[in-house]
Structure formats: C-alpha cells, structure tokens
Image 1: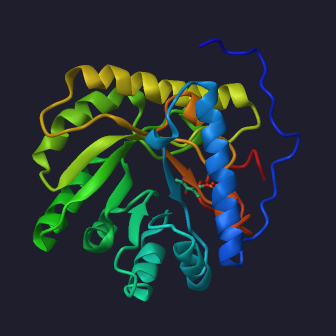
Image 2: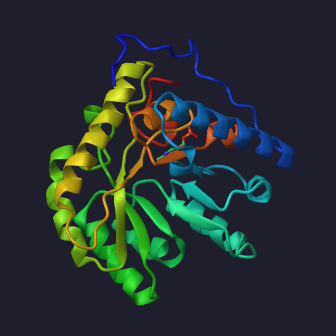
Length: 266
Ligand SMILES: *Cc1c(COP(=O)(O)O)cnc(C)c1O
C-alpha cells in the first residue's frame, strides 16, 4: 500500500452527541458500521472480519442498558472496579459480557478472573501469573491480548515491541489464558501519519510473531483503533476496533484522565 505524504484529518476533533435512547444507539451503531464498511472497501477487506467492541467506560447503568437493547453484547471497560460494578448491577442480562481493556494491577487480577471474558492489556509476567492462578481457582479461562507500546514515549503501558516475542514464548505456561493476538493504543496526536505508523508497527510485529507461534497461542487478532482513528486501523489490518465516544457520546473527562500521557487532543 502507498502512503500519502499528508492525510486528511478533521481540523477539530469531532464532538459526539450523547446517546440517550435506543434509537440514538441504533443510529450511532449504524454510523460506526458504515464507517467500518467504508474503510474496508478502500482496502478490499470483508467487514465480517472486523469486530466492533463498544467501550462503555464512564457510561452509567441506564445508558449501558439502552446500548444492550440496541444490540451490544460485549462491552469494553478500562477500569476493573467500574467494570465489576456494572457486571454485578447487570447480572440479570446473562449474555452481556465484559472485556477489560485497561492496565491491570496484580492485586486486581482476582476480580478480573471472576467476571471478565476478555482482557486486552496483558503486559507483564506478574499479571499473567496472577490471572492464571485466580482463573484456575474459579475454573474459568480468559481471552487475552498482549498490549504493545507502539508509540514510544506516549504511554507507559504495553510491552516494548522487542520484548513481545520472549513474552509470548512464556505464555503457554498459563493454561487458563487463551492468547488471541496483540493490542495497542496509537499515539494521541493530530498527525495521522504518526497514528498510522503505530498500527503498521503492530501489524508487522504480529506478522513476524506468527511465523513461530508456540503451541496453544494464537497470534491472529489485532485490536487497534478508537472513535477517532479506527478507519486508519482497519486499513492497516485491525480485527477488533474499540469504540466508545462514537457510540455513547463524548466523555466529559479528557483522555488524559485515562492515559496520563494523552494531552494532544485536549
Ligand atoms: C476509552 C478507550 C477506548 C475508546 O476510546 P473512544 O475515544 O471512546 O472511542 C479504546 N481503547 C481503550 C484502551 C480505552 O481506554
């Protein structure tokens, strides 16, 4: 694929209106699916190979229930306590499942093992050990993505790309973890070429790791792209896009609240 020297990027970050009804959610989900389909068409990909993961962090229970009614069944949350609270509050919706997409401290692994079906931010041996131990105790297993820091200085979370291969070789030890692939957060910048470079790095790494994946490990999935940049991620091979604001509406808290290094957009 040829990369343009500059890329079109909105002059100001879009403000997403808050979704307050089932109709709002249906509308927003349609808009996002259309954007996914348009991006797929540009690079001859099949939209069926892209999973949309709605991200419901900071969204209250009432609005999460509306999004459920509009069809959302697996939701991403970046704070464990918040996710666990919502899981408990909505236990009456047995087919609503939870994906933890934010950094995990070892002492919260027990909570994740209890309720989550997916964890996308695995970046340390200690967390892998703790999760595996608690999952064994619960008789559960967990889909996991290894988080990679593709942006250098911008985030303190995620493994450096050069460390992922050695880390991957250890993961078969943890039989309750079903390793699916890699996850990243791109640089939070207005410079679309630098965003794209993060996604290219993750795909290139995945392609290299796939050559000698240990037994029991899958290295197929690429979780990359959010409300502002998921089209670029799809063009570069994303199989999961994590989309919050374009579905639920703009958050009042700036991104720097969630990722300490994120300031470029705020
Ligand atoms: C919040 C969040 C997202 C979604 O970001 P939006 O701008 O709401 O689409 C994606 N990934 C992670 C890790 C997040 O914390």
